[in-house]
Length: 207
Image (cartoon, rainbow, N blue to C red; front, top):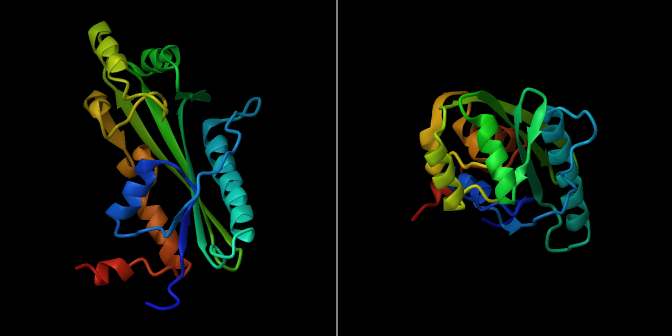
């Protein structure tokens, strides 16, 4: 389809790409941006998710401006934050971080927030913030040690991936499952559709 607008996903997350592909959307470009994800003093989890998705979108806009190939692209950026009350859990990179997250989550409720920002080819910005409430089972020491040994927690907000082994830890989930994975599909597709991106193009052109 000549002239079909391009979509740039401003994320290096394979999970976000897989979720878009699940919805029949194939970004033409992937652009991981290096935003400082350090929370500001006193910043709440939902506020951090809102701020970071906007910052990532702005960084991606700079990349688009510098590239003739990317001109006229839609830009989609997102950030996912796990919180217990006002406490922000880290994206665990070290074993002690993951262990701390599991201890805090065990037997307790928490919330996952994903901020989504869409930038249109004309430069308009649209935002969504999606919240999902979850509760973990009480984890035994053996379960914690085995999960830590799996390495599945590495790089994951809150030290776990719901689409993996940790899905068996979830007692209750209220809200969007795909939000917890990293990109709330209903809200994302609604944003794209509302701003004129041809979401259904690949649905109609599947072999």
